[in-house]
Amino acid sequence: TGVGGPDGAAAAAGGASNPATAARMASLKIMRRLSALSVSCRKDDSLAQAMIRTLKACREAASQISDAQLQLESMGFISDLLTLTEEEVAALMKARQQQQQQQ
Image (cartoon, rainbow, N blue to C red; front, side, top):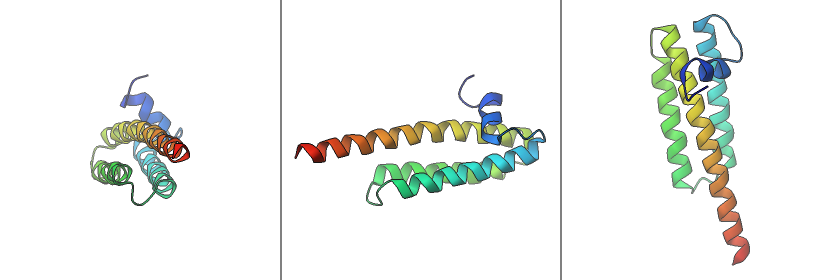
């Protein structure tokens, strides 16, 4: 299990067997996660907002790939990047919260 590839793609797809259907499911799941992440972080947090915009653009570009298997693998990679981004945003928010408590 590495970043991207078949394992990440399968996790992103939620178990669909047809690559085209799985890629669509993965894309929708990624959009839901991006929306939730966007809501959870502050609008003035330019770093988090930039990461979210970048991943949205990657998802949009990946959805234009005509080869369903390649599209699915790309969605898996984006899903892995999104997981890392979610962890990074959570760490940033926690650090800022601790900083505010110390002031």
